[in-house]
Length: 138
Image 1: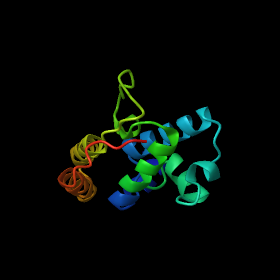
Image 2 (image 1 turned 60 degrees about the horizontal axis):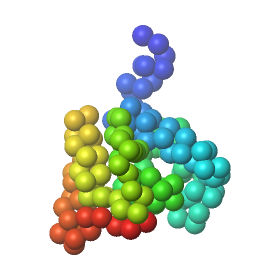
Image 3 (image 1 turned 90 degrees about the vertical axis):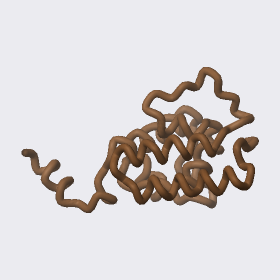
Image 4 (image 1 turned 60 degrees about the vertical axis):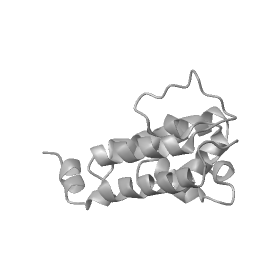
């Protein structure tokens, strides 16, 4: 067993890099670079450069609200960042279904055993649905 694996196993679950964390970070970096944005430009005043850098490297998790901000600024659906194989063929950037994206993300987290985080996203989706926030314009 390599030293890296041993180090990773010794960390609490919330500190371990997960495939989802890494995928989200890699996709944020890819989309940001494609658009020629710096970390500061992407984060603007809402998200710091250091936080976004940690997210892009898979070193910290991004909240649903922060991911919504990133998705909005990059003009991409939330599903692009969390789905294993996002389908962008029918994506209309003027209409993003945040509730469905949050439910999908919640299910993915639950399937990976991160129940606390899964519940947070499921609760947000239920509250947003109750408020009628199915789709929002970008």
